[in-house]
Length: 422
Image 1 (cartoon, rainbow, N blue to C red):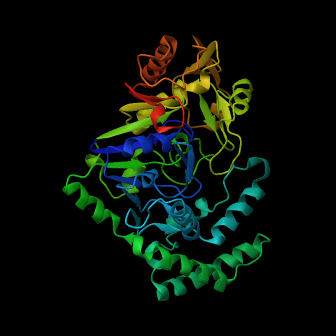
Image 2 (cartoon, rainbow, N blue to C red):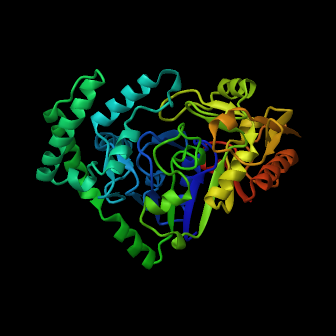
């Protein structure tokens, strides 16, 4: 496989966790490169469901090394809980996980600021998970953040945290929030730091040494293309770079060392939280929710749903340099006689074949749809491309061609063996 970047080609929740788990069989190392515990990757192994927030999905395979890269923001207490939950069910973490010493730390004041700022926005709220991710990245950009290397150095951590608590308590008071106890935060984070210290390392050097030794690496993204801080539907985005470039800056591996980019997408479109979703459709949302599908792995919120948006996925292919496509959740459309696909946006007299940067313009766009026949046949038991219904194969080929990348796999359910390779 060499070095592979895997990204979401829509608004997140495309099923990346399942595809990562499948691809991990062919690699040596899996690297998480951005985001925080606002993300959720769901993996089914047999009848057992695993929901991972910070730890790469590769941890579920015992002979793989997982790395949390420098581009991730880490809630140490949440990470310790995640580790302990995995260990309780027999998943080995120690020896299989490394954490970048340069990754920034999420603190309680980040979470409190996140919640206060969101509530103050009223109708203009973004739909944040309120886990402090945005404020933590804000401190990183402002050069006031604390990193994992600080957390595991007791004297340095106490000195820096005391200053950060003092400053942020002033802000919290101004926002009408209760100030934080330095001792309580310090003691709980120091305990987490002690637990995580054996896993903290210079992951950049480790990855480059591994590549020199011939290791194949999978770079795991969180969220999706249109939640990217620079290229998404700003301001209704996350606070990191979710596109392929973020895999390079978030891991310390240069672009010319990457061999391919795989884009993951559904055969329809979903989004969690606020912001534009041009093809949103109540009928398809009711159908999917009625099937028990499309609820957030992290928040449990019902996802907004719509028809497949080829304008968006084509734009994502350009932004990420997507070479190959993995289409998940094909079985979600099994009961439909007709499937609509958005092939362009109509904005006044203009027809657009790209996603406009200006949200006011995007909000005025109407999808231009083309109808395709559904297969109206269950696919969840099918295990090969040739035995998929001809109309399902035709639909997959059409949306891949519209996106502009090669279809190499599809998925008809959450289990590992429900993955079909072309």
